[in-house]
Structures are given as structure tokens and as C-alpha cells.
Amino acid sequence: MSISRHIDDYIADRGIKENDEVVPESECQVFDGQVLSEEDRLENARAVVAQLLESDSPPRLG
Image (cartoon, rainbow, N blue to C red; front, side, top):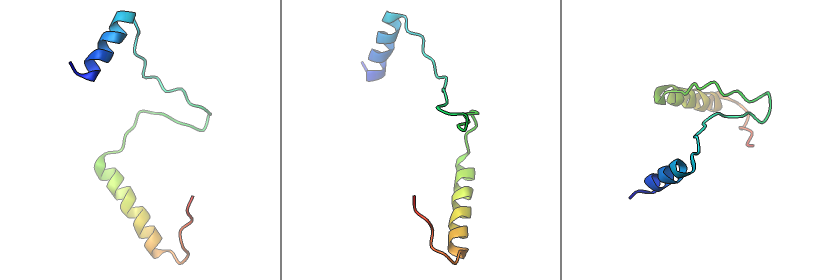
């Protein structure tokens, strides 16, 4: 048996209903279910790197 099967059995035995709802800690957090594709994430990273390379000042960390 795999670990997940043990967990599935445990949940089923106790009648636990799985819930994947995300409850924001503040109004500023937005969880809209949208996920960027790998291409979009790569393009965003390229844009950040290009912006850093073109900048005259060093990047702020943190």
C-alpha cells in the first residue's frame, strides 16, 4: 500500500470531507485559481532579468 492509500482509508473511515478552499489571511490576498503556464512564468523571469540588467542601480534584496 502507498502512503496516499493509507491517508485515503483514514479519511474515509472517519467520514472526513476534503476541502480545498483557501481562506485569505487578509483582504490583500487574492486566490482566483489562475495558474501561469510554464511559458508565462519563463517570460516573466526573462522580463525581470532584462529589467535588472538594464538598470543602473543594484537590485534591492528582501
